[in-house]
Image (cartoon, rainbow, N blue to C red):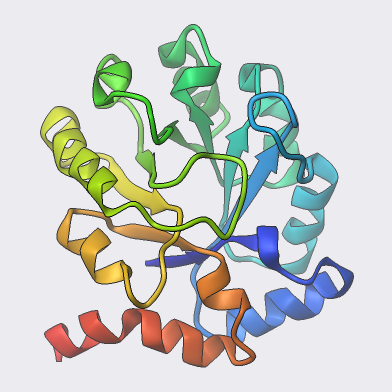
Length: 216
């Protein structure tokens, strides 16, 4: 599944953007929350999450790139998040944060940044619904894809077993998406590869084309 990274959407026409993505066949939206502390960039918070929630019935996959995410889980749930992914580097007790997310009825994900070893998520890997592997340094869109980091996906699958969905974020486009899937990724977060196109449906088709050909 391809999830558009809404960081690059046209926020002046948010509702229209969402309708275009729905019409293009996307099944969920990926929302990056950045606090300017954990990562050197700001994005948006609960108000914008709620605005997306008001615009669509598509699941909202919320990625918290922030310090102290455990202090805001309830607020993001109330804003309309369907899943929350936090960074292993940002918490002291990952197991407790996963439990907090699950108790609110949401899917729980853990993200691992580009330079963080796989061993950092060993304690929680089998307890989450989603593991997000960053193939760029977290915090900015439009960075180049680093294929060597896909080795992490294979190591994480061995560590976590078959339970969690493996998601990859960073530099995913028509030229790199096949590598991601071959390495074990199931959900691909795509920003520029969607929003730099005038036709979102065609962008989605191009991203999925290699896999449709394999199935058909």
